[in-house]
Amino acid sequence: MEDCGFRVRVEVQVSGTSVAKLGQVVMLAAVFAVSAPVEGPCADPLARYRAEYAGTSMPADWRYQWNQGAIGDTNSYTNLLWDTTRGIWTPDGSTFEVPPHYYLYVYGAGMHPGDSAVPQRYAIAGRKLTGYSGPVFVTSSFLLLNSLSGGIDFRIYVGTNPIHAITLQGADDARTNSLDCFLGQAQAGDTVYVAIGPGSDYFFDGASLDFALSSAPLPGRRPGGSGIVAGYATDFQTGRPKPGWMYMVNTDGAMGNPAGYFPMQWDGIRYEINVKADFPNPVPYSWLSLHGTGGHPGAGAGQGGSPVDRYAIAAYVVKREGRYSLTNASLTMADIGSVDLMVHVGTNAPVAILDNITQAGGPAAFDVDLGRLAEGDTIYVGAGPNGSESFDSFTWDFSIFARINQGTTILIR
Image (cartoon, rainbow, N blue to C red; front, side, top):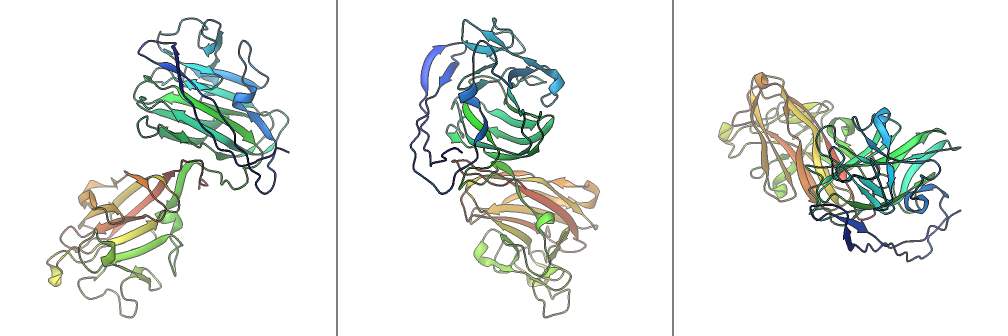
C-alpha cells in the first residue's frame, strides 16, 4: 500500500529553449512533495503518467497518440513518433510546424495540442488497464496552463465513453487545477485516454500535468472535478425543498434583493405563498407558484396595486468554491401569456436573461456563466410576469454545472 501523506505541490515553470515558432516554450515543471501522515492508507496506483513516461519507445500499456478524426473515435487515433532532435513525441517524429498537427506533442511533464480547425487535434495519452477490473479513479492530478493560452479543452475517456470534460482559459486558469474524478467501473483491457485539445487556437497551449489511475480515491478527497451538481427537475421534492434548495417570491421590493424574498411552502400540490388560504391567492401573488416542471409568476407592476413584478424564484446554495454556470436551461410557455427570466447571485444585480417569452417562440434557452462563486453563495433564478400575470404558466428546467479547483473536487452527478 502507498503512503498517502498530505502533499503540497509547488510548480516551477522554467523558460527553456523554444521548440517552435511564435514564442511557444516547452513548459518544464518540478514537483516537490512535503508529506505529513493522514489517516489510513490508499490503494496502490494502477498507473502514473510521469513515473511511467518514457522516450524513444513507448512504455508497457501506454500509447502516446493524436486523433485524425473526431476525438472519441479511437479508430482515428494514431501513435506519435519519437523526435530524437527535440526529445518529445510528435505526429511524424521530425517536422514540427506543418498542418494539421502543428505544435502537437507529448513529453514527460505534459502535452501540447495541435490545430484548432475541425476536427481539432488532441494530444492523447492512453493507458491500458491490464489484469485489473473494478473502480477506477483519477488521483494525485494537476494541470497548469500557460497564462498566455487562449484556452484548452481537456477530456478523459474510458474507451469511447466520455467521462470528464472541462474547458480551461489561460488568463483565468494560470494556476494548478485538480483533475481528480471517478471514471466508473472498468474491465481488464479497457483503455483510459487523457486528451488535451486546442481552444480558439493552438498558440501557447502547452500544459504541464500529472495524474495517477487508482482503484480508490485519496483519503480526504472527494472524487469529481467538474460536472452537474444540481438540477431543478431532478432535485425537486414535495413536502419541503431538498437541502440546498429554496423556492421563494419577492414580497418586499423588486427581484435582486434577497432580503426581500420570502420562502414558499408546499400546499400538497405546489409551492406557494399562503398554504392556509385557498389557491389562487389574492393579488399580488395570485397564481404564483412552483412545481416539479415549472410554475407561474405573480402580478405585474401596477396590477392590483403591486409596485413591482412578482417572481417565482428557485434558489440554490453553492456548497464548494469554484466556477459555476447554468446549463441545459430552457423555459417554455404553457399558455398564451408571456414571462421574463432573471438570474443573480447573492446581492449582485440581477441579469435579464430572457424577455417577453411567448408560446409562439417555443423553448427559450438560458444557459449562462455565473463566474467564480464562493461556498455559501446563492444562485437565484426567477420567472416574472413581464408586466401582466395573465395566462403565464410555464415549464422550465436547468442544471447547475460546477468546476472545482484548488486540489479539492466534487462528485459528478
